[in-house]
Image (tube, rainbow, N blue to C red; front, top):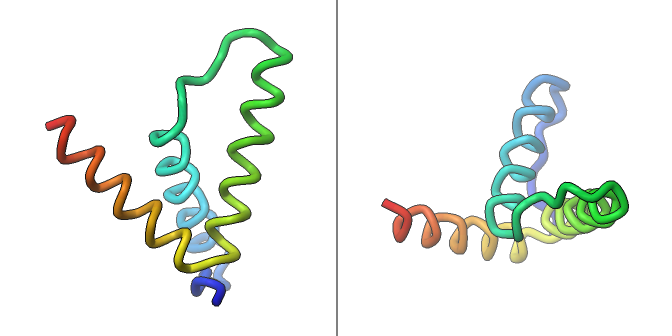
Length: 73
């Protein structure tokens, strides 16, 4: 089942930015090498597509992100 992504352009942009931020926070740091940056961006886009297509993966990402946030505090 796909999660409910807002149809409004502004809300959609903010929603996708939030999900992207969570994905990036749960991944290794952004590399500085240009070839590795391309692969990193592709990995992030792939994980973003997975999370926006499957609500269970999005929920798992949210739980992992909250757990990561709470241990950082």
